[in-house]
Amino acid sequence: MSSTPPSPAIRIDTIDTDGTDLECTIVCTDDLRRFFGGEPFRVSYDVPIEDVPDGILAIPVLSQVCPVAWATGADVYVPEVDETFARALGDVEETLLSLYPEFMEGGELYTRRTIDVEPAENTADAETASDSGLLFTGGVDSTCSYIRHREEAPTLISIRGWTISPSAAHDDRWADLRSRVERFADERDLETQFVESNMLSFLDHPMLLAHFKRFVDGGWYSSVGHGVGLLGLCAPMAHARGTEDLYVAATHWDGIDLEWGSRPDIDDHVRWAGTQCHHDAYDLTRQERLDVIAEYAREHDPELQLQTCNDRMDGNCGRCEKCYRTAVGLRLSGLDPAEHGYPFSDADYHDLRRSLEGGEWILGEDERYMWADIRDRVRETEPESAAEREFFSWLETADLGELVDESKSPLHHRALRAGARNAPNGVYTTLYPAWNAAKNASRRLGL
Image (cartoon, rainbow, N blue to C red; front, side, top):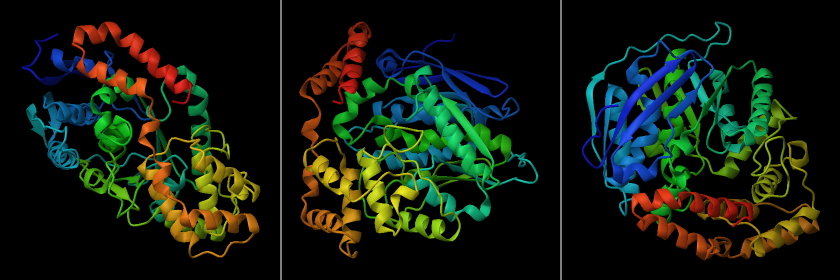
């Protein structure tokens, strides 16, 4: 292994491919080592990538590493990178620096050469070939984006590594998601692609939170890294297939000013030779996306099933905040939630209100905006039952700010973060197992 670059810095050391698999190792200076989990970065695709140029193969790991580098003022060294993507990184960096001036410092990308990669021809089956792809889970946002772009017959791309861990403990959840996406695609003569990566364990996510949680509303990956991170993962696959347009559905919408890692001014900048990425449906609120879905269901697919649950992948539990929120939204769009994957009846309005008022769920600012969006529609909607009228009346005057309570983060958890931030790297390495055990214990207890 070659020498460590000047401090602070991260070097992409090796990039190897084997059939459909990619593996990268990095070298970083001692002051940055705590932000990485110590294992190689890995991605597996459904298509061979051995013939993909090195400048494209570097994109997945750069997409994970560069936000960490910018947050720590580090430079990044890579032997070769696609010229178009190198320019894109500069644009994404500019956005993140403006979004997080409290801690983003920026850094330089150094490469022995940038290459102008020739776009590849589309290699999909001739009968189902598509020049576009869509990151897809089957939830409200990605289903709305499919409906908006269905004339393109986009390839549906699902990624394992963020909300579904690559660990064996999540194999069943991944199998459930794959089965559901494949069924959705088969019914519409679409192709699928499945990508698996260890991007969160490659990064030391707990340590990133320890240093930067006080600046962001959610986790590191959700607040900072997942826009460029998830899109960049797709680069070798997109090049191998000749994908020209890659869509990622918006979570928020115009008018919501929240720090979030996937935004138009991030995702629309991401590009590489032959492929342009797009942040889709930012012009629609979540309720308006449900309106799009409702119109499509009534006209084309009355049995359409959505999957949004925070707790299950083989259906919706019907009891978590996101299930309740989606069910109410479906009703407001004129659909019966029970016909689209949500066991919801009038009796659930009482339980929903009790859970919201009782602080049963730890909610963020984005949930506050989403309930405000629902409230706006409630004010235009005539209730259909006494239970609905009672809930609508409460929601119209509820203080939604009280639903978001940052003090629900346990004091001992915040103390752990502060201790990890300030520990020397050698001490941190020794204490990390205890920090990780405490983090997992808090998660199991719902803290």
